[in-house]
Image (cartoon, rainbow, N blue to C red):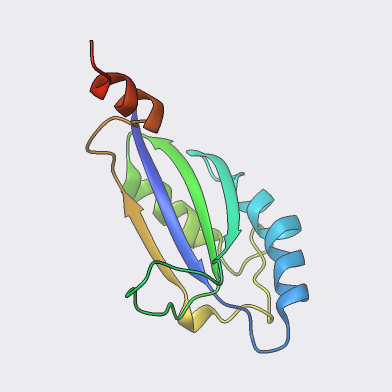
Length: 123
């Protein structure tokens, strides 16, 4: 079974953030998690402080979905086939034209700072 991370960068329509966030948290994420292969989701608001020298982001929100599937194309096609239907209604408060969606595949293990410090500690 392949494991993937889906990164979704979004914006609300101007002055409709509350409506957008309510729809995303209470409608969209539950609908997305009904798609076979989607196993978890978490949302974020991009922080006001970013790394020095980093370009400003055109997005305000980030959703991270965990997907487990043997066929990522089929899983994403199923998700898109539901978008805008009664199974996954869209919101007029979402600026869909500005959204960006990226699927990622892990290429290395998850490493914690504690593990790094333990490896670097004098023996």
